Every structure is written in structure tokens, then in C-alpha cells.
Length: 133
Image (cartoon, rainbow, N blue to C red):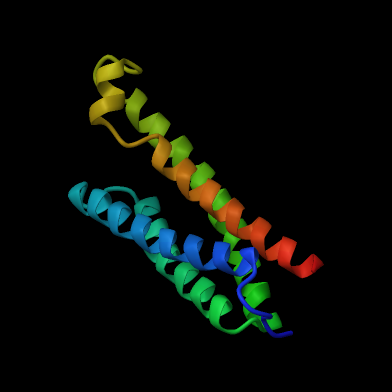
């Protein structure tokens, strides 16, 4: 099934894929700063560039196997972002004085994993929406 022009869904997949690359850079810097203390810090560092590459490939070539791979990766990334949110929130709580504003400011960024989940959900919706057309 080929692309007809540049429908919104294709543009959304392209832009979310570029967003995954940008978030990958930020996440890698933050986790590198923490010396990858927890095994789960490797998950977004590995998954985001793969997700971005498959999304860019889907933007260029709308084939069924690429679409299926992107769907699976998006669902996995939604779950991974929620897991990251849990770990980051728990990390803030482990700091001295627990869940105080100062710890949210200097601790792990609680919202960043949710941003990954939200961007993955947008990409997932774009793929599902384009399948209906």
C-alpha cells in the first residue's frame, strides 16, 4: 500500500520519529550523567533510536511489515515510558526529605518518561488512523 501525497498521518509519523531522536539525545545525556546505575536506564537509550529508525522507514516506505514493527515498538515504548515514570517517581522519593519540590527539581525528571509515552501514543494513533483510510 503506497502513500498518496503527504497525508497528515504520514507527517505525524515523520515528526514523532524525529521527536524520538531528540528525546534519545536528552535521555542518553541524563542517563550517562548518572553512569547508568540501573539496568532500566539502557532501555530508552536502545529503544528510542530503533523506534525512530523504523518510523522514518515507515515514512519513506509504507509496507506492512514496517507498519507492524512500528506498531509493536510504539506499544512497547508506551509501556516503557510508564515504567520509567514509576522509576523516576520512586527515585525522587528516595532522595533526602522525599517528595519535596526541591527533589523534583534536582532529581530524575518525572515527566520525561511520560513524554516518551505520549509521543509513542501519538505515533500509534497516526499509524492506526492511516490504516483506516
